[in-house]
Amino acid sequence: LGSIHFDKSDWLDFGVADKMDPFLLALLSYRRNKIDEAIENCTNILKKNAYDQAAWGLKMACMTEEIYVDELENDERGIAEMLLEDDIIAPNARPGTSFSKPISSPKTQSQAIRQFLALLPRSNTGRPLSGVIRSETSNKAGTMEQALRTSRTAKTTRAASSNSARFIRLGTASMVSQKDGPFLNLSRLNVDKYANDPLLSRLLFEYVFYHEGDMKIAHQIAAIATKCANYSDWYWKNQLGKCYYRLGMYADATKQFLSSLNNQKMVETYAYLAKISKRLDQPFMAIEHYTNGLQTFKNDITLLTGLARVYEQLGDDEKSIDTYKNILRQDPNNIEAIACVAANYFYSDQPEVALRYYRRILQVGVNNAELFMNLGLCCFFCQQFDLAISCIERAQNIASDDVVADVWYNTGNVLLATGDTKMAARCYRLAMAADNSHAESICNLAVLQMREGKLGESQCLFHLAIEKGPYLFEPHYNAALLAYQVTLISDFTFSNPLTKPYSLDFDHSSRVFFLSRNFPNYDPNFFAYHSHRTQLQTIIFQLGHFEESRILVAKALQLFPEHFYSKILANSVDQMYQVN
Image 1 (cartoon, rainbow, N blue to C red):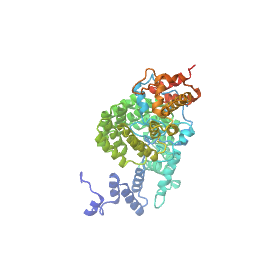
Image 2 (cartoon, rainbow, N blue to C red):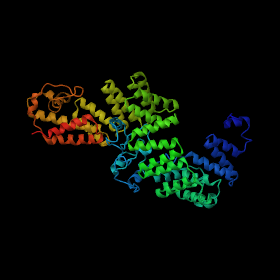
Image 3 (cartoon, rainbow, N blue to C red):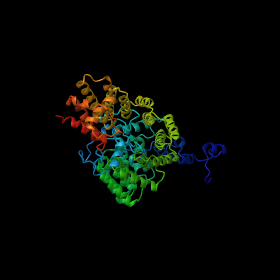
Image 4 (tube, rainbow, N blue to C red):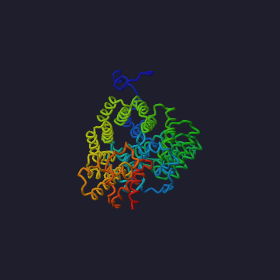
């Protein structure tokens, strides 16, 4: 038929399907990714002849294809793997040598990069988000409280359970879903017979490994097939390595992959070696494996992507972005690279350049709320307000439950930039209603409440934001600033019984103390001028009141050492302890 393609209905119209061999019909359905039709045809063949190995193998391939997951991308870990594993080489590593302690030293990064990292949005575990969300970048080892902080909902990027148990449940569910029970009874399977068959061994292994999730039987098949191939087939050595990796035997997996490289150098093998190094928290070893692979397979997309992810997890965003740009030179349609470069340009105050990249993703065919929200933000900061509103409305219409909180939070930021504080507060409340642990929305709502003079409510919201998002520096700084100013107001009121009632107004009175005592060379853009400087000489300072502010601003500086206003506030609090 050449390049002309017919559906099954077309074959029935022409009377071709009735005359075609059923196995050929199943092969055509499988080739056109009509897996259900292919399985149905194979089942009909096996009902007539249960010993038809061709139909048996094709049905296994179809069932494997239904739930196939790329092992290189499947690195999701649960609580058991993160807290109970003892395979980490250096639990107390130096910054920049472990994924748990990314680069943060001023000697290794420029000020622009440090500010870029501080402004990046973060996941529920505190890791900065890049252009795309990946399961392995959301995992962060820590205490049991940190691991259990995120509830078991769709808003998480990983399941709060064991990874190995998830694979067992996957295999069990796939068997129960069969009308006539499991397709294969693995307990009665003659493993030696089929593992020695070169035509069926690969199909059987992939079915057992992916569909059934039985690592014991899969390991037996791979071991027998490796021996049958005289230990010279790189494929079976890789499969043995994958089985060892699933079983947590990382040293044995490394031996199999290194032995596979002696037989045949493959991109997959280098990627698996790097994956083992990342699981053992050895980022430099992972970089070495990726580099060795790139020497043989120059500019390979898989290796370059893995290398960029390692740099990103280490906090070395300069090398990460350079690697992503190299990926785009090889594959201009790589969505992950486009999104990461676009995010870098956006947080580097170049929204017009980021807009071009996000438009490219839209042209590729991606259509989701995150993309339209990013397009709306880029258009807004490029002063294209009409396009920004359209994109934001589109994002709100198609937002799913796991991103609706972020959509309302960004909408509130846009309204806040236009000066509509009431609508912005409503958006933040909607974000909190969608996700009660959305720390960014809680913090921004607290700032708006503080501007309205509701100091008690704003203080509670700031502490709630710190509880929900301990990785954010903004609520720590805002809470410290509020505690500092409220302390000054209360001390000033106590020492001046004739003070007018308006002195308790937050925006009116607190600026007096900042200007006169701590900011003689004040910045007009940050503080407003007030004339009552002479009254400050009678303030009775109670140093214990400033301890809360001191602790909070120290935590803010720990999270973002380059924050200018946190440094000023810390200096102001320290001066209070030096008063004679």
